[in-house]
Amino acid sequence: MYTWIPLKSSADLAELNNQLTPEYDPANVAKKLADGLSDAIKAVLIERNYIDKDYRSTYYNFYSKKGQFYRPDCVRLHLFDETVKFDQKALKLHCADEQLDHHYFGFIVLRPTGIATIGRSVVSPDVRSEPGSHVITTNHKVHLLGYKLTVQGFPSMDQHIDISVCAHVACWSILRHYSERYSIYREFLTHDITMMAQEFNPGGLVPSNGLKVSHAERVFQEAGTFPLLIARVGNDDSSFYRQLHSYVESGFPLFAAMHGRNHAIAIVGYEWRTPAGATPTTAMRYAWDEVKSLVAVDDNYLPYLSIPSHGGADNSSYSCDDIDAFIVALPEKVFYPADAVDKLSETLFRLGPGLGLPPEDESILRYFITTGSALRHFMRERESEFDRNLLETVMSLPFAQFVWIVEVATAADWAIGQISARAILDATASLREVTPFWLIHSRTNALIFDRSTVGDTMNSVRALALSGMSNTAFTRWDKNLRPTQSK
Amino acid sequence: MNQKDEKGVFDIIEGLALADPALLESFKQAMTQEVIPEIVRVVEERRMRAAESRHCQLKC
Image 1 (tube, one colour):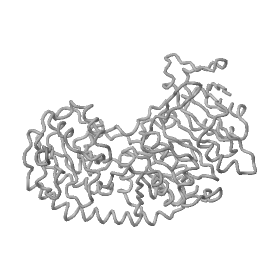
Image 2 (tube, each protein chain N blue to C red):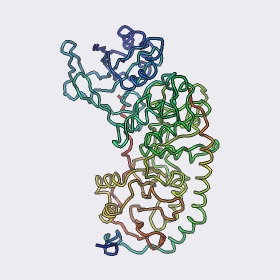
Image 3 (cartoon, rainbow over the protein chains, first blue to last red):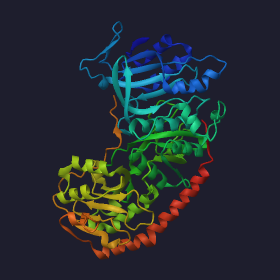
Image 4 (spheres, one colour):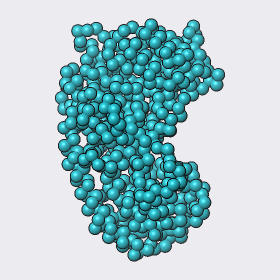
């Protein structure tokens, strides 16, 4: 039932071909893993006769109805580093510090379907991504040989090609992340996604025809989220990419549609460009301008594929230029869209004289959603950075559950992960509100907005002079995504 | 305690002053005359583009 394969190099993954029967397509799996995973993986533990809930959902509703015989169970591959040893007789795993979690890189389920056999997988981005990426992850529990392991990653799988295609898998991976991360969302299996996409039971043939973007929207609606579809307007729509990035920055994985390729992927992270240092910008920039690439979960590849922000000459690969639309599965109480924040954020500089903001053409703007609770926690962890009255203000303001944050940084700030000013907006504000703010502050001044009265906008603002913040750190928000640590 | 007796955030925080009315008025004018109309226009344009995008087939 269990076989341990030590790896001196990735070439040793070819041993999978000797250990697994052809229904798992081990030769192709071995090649894919050897090409895509780092040499930090020093052993693979094969777990046979594994009952995978997602494969079972497709087995009962599709594969068991076919004339060809398919097994009902799967194989699961577990990935470990060099410090872990396996006692084959006792079926025990050993590592010197007895912290197996620290040496476990995740698992890959193989389906007995002959083609596209990589099933539900959660692999650590540390063994896949380029260094310096920031990826949306959550903890996934793994029960193995009586051990309770945890791996931080984002779910992925190959498309089945018949009972599910790219769009189904992109929906599945996002909703699986949601159900693992947030207790308000229930778990949906692969076959559930197929059913949720249509008003009727699509049977076994219709899913292979793919989904329309509207079907994907329907899946997210059925799952209890509030999907927002954002489509690119023309080829020169930089606001579209700024919003895409802002939602990823907020920790929302995105369903991204590429019309020209009839393909869908999940966007789960990004990589920053190397900062240009303290050289001042000469025109206002946005955080998107500092992005080198996005990180995608694409069912044609292993997870955490890096896609450049702009295209190259190679037609076989794609770039962010190919993304025509995305769906962000929002929680209920986000009413103020990123389009509005994008337009409003530039207007902050009209308040510059009263706030001590840096000059507009020397600034880099970044905006994202978080919760009022998370903001309070972030500032509490960094109490020493803030004026006492400012901290009391943040703890006292009756924030709605979600807030938009706009951060203003100079190039010098950006290079060292600092900012010069932060604005907190009400994510439940209406489009036509003149001051959808809770608070705007720099190192020296703050404006506080009382949202307890409607209509009396200009009398609901107070100024606060801040002290003690001129020489402290003013840390850029970095709580939503996990930086990778390439191994 | 009724609503009139409840303390708002302006009653709790020390050191508050009236904000510069001229600055606020300038900001309000910019919002009402430029930014909000542009936000409304952009949101509507985005909605229409999204409606077209819904028909795209994804199967690769």
